[in-house]
Length: 276
Image 1: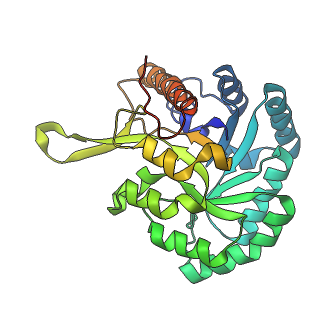
Image 2 (image 1 turned 45 degrees about the horizontal axis):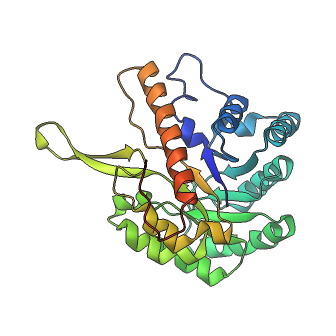
Image 3 (image 1 turned 30 degrees about the horizontal axis):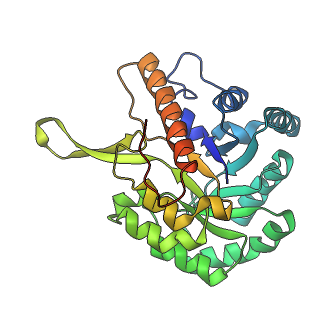
């Protein structure tokens, strides 16, 4: 098990809303500087524009920094997953996160099963685990049913219980349902806050330990240390007043969340942890 960052940890700092967006080499360097050991390139639009040589240079940088690379995309079409398995081969990535739905394709459960059955031999041959993320567009029970029907050690779940709240699924229920088939963890905290005038709510991210994610419950159910499951930090940080304050808060959340997970990792699961 290792703790790492995702491109989603740099969501605003890598966006075109800031004067100097961070590129992938800068994100890798910052990840290593903070002491994380995994970096997941997830839903990063610029990846497909990189040449094979640029991908090799990215892997060389990751190796020099002591970082393990993972990949993330969306969709199950065979040609798309084969393309990303090609990227994974160059980058040395052994985890590929995806989702049922792509930009222009929403497979039924039967079609999703057929597509996964087609790609599973290639996953096994390449030694890559495909982790399908829990999110509101597909009920976690549907996702799990397809994964269990396939019953392959190379296809499982990327567990992110916060994503399912928009579909009125309780985080603890999603954890209970999916923990045994989890291959990758996306870790972010989340909370509701009242809108102005108490008219409705905003559902957004917050620093770990300050929201509705019961991380201790998640950790006890999944057992990432014992099962070698990497924990990848993400954020749902709303835009602040300006680019400078947004980027500063994103960095602050990242540092806090790394400290939080590292402190938890030093504590046996189930034992109480009292912050200093």
